[in-house]
Image (cartoon, rainbow, N blue to C red; front, side):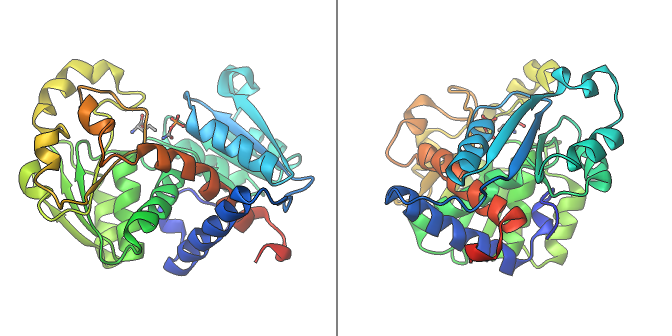
Length: 306
Ligand code: CP
Ligand code: NVA
């Protein structure tokens, strides 16, 4: 594995290795052990869009691993003044050991990776959010013991998080039911690819039916970054896809409710559900740190890690 741009860049075995490594690193952090496996390594983090979790968890991950992370805002780089992506990729490759990027358009990261000679990690694009999903798989494993027998209902927008989750379901054997309003289905190419990979994927527009027998209900914002102009229309179109207490009560009694955050209370999820007994959103957020470390080690770590 050279880059992590899509969940589909991973084989099921590589994904399993990353999850196991993340579990181990989480334990080591809890025990207060020094894990400076990335001593003298640097990570460039380019952000074209805002971030709390991704930025901080990657930066702390690099610090915990004895390395260094550089926060680079798109507009403060010469990129903001039009320096080509292909030049920036080749320049950064001469300085750092890996680059993590959050971009508006997926093509930007694909172009960057084409010219980069160091691993490139997708810290969210309009198409995918693989680092989020790796942390989420770790969290689901912690609560449910495994991924194979899990039934996950996605309720809301068929967006970047949903797309990566669909590919993850193909890699892990997790069963996934996708419930979106008409016109907001996940990316067709990703769905096709996931089905080719053997995904157990169904589509159920009615959220009440989608959550039946669900072990996990996952939702995300109705208006993703870059879609602000569509806000009013989206609020109307998604009104029936809110994760409310009534909806949660239709799933299994021990259902866990997930959200990648930031959440918009009163839109995709109610305050009661987000703060309620089924919600595990802050465990998810914490696991970004442990998962990120495992990703970094797999991409730029030395032999001693395994
Ligand atoms: N979930 C997530 O990626 O959060 P940030 O936008 O805060 O990084
Ligand atoms: N779907 C959201 C995820 C934010 C972490 C967005 O793209 O804005």
